[in-house]
Image (cartoon, rainbow, N blue to C red):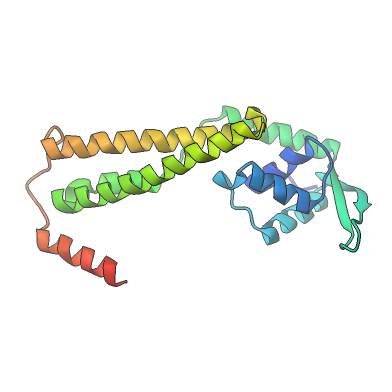
Length: 206
């Protein structure tokens, strides 16, 4: 039996099978409804591949087959005791351990001074516009989840993701204000404004 750690998609599959046995098509539907793609890439091919790997590793097993009308027969999977143990162990690690993460935004913030005032503020303003659109969309999704009665415990990951985006938006807006007012001063080396104009032109033409 494999001792490799469960992948994020593997965890998502076992999370659903923890509730009840189901076939991959039903898993995909529930993942869409619960916005699992906020934390893991969910594609049909990768989902079926993950299900096959979980079965091969002894974490899940076939418990039934179903046929709805003329549709192809669907295989229903359930979690094995070994799968339940692996799921609990990995779940505890993911929830309790603090591991290093390397968001790309941190690398961008590290080069603010090197980019200079004009370029840095321009790009930060672009980021704010995108974050405002994203946080507005988040609120629409959250309202829908509350209205359709989906238990909140099933979308704690979405709550966290929306709170993180809202925090990033507020923090970035404060940063822009700090840079504009000089509370966070730039150093002397500044790229010329002509470079900013060139960058904007290239964006529009690409």
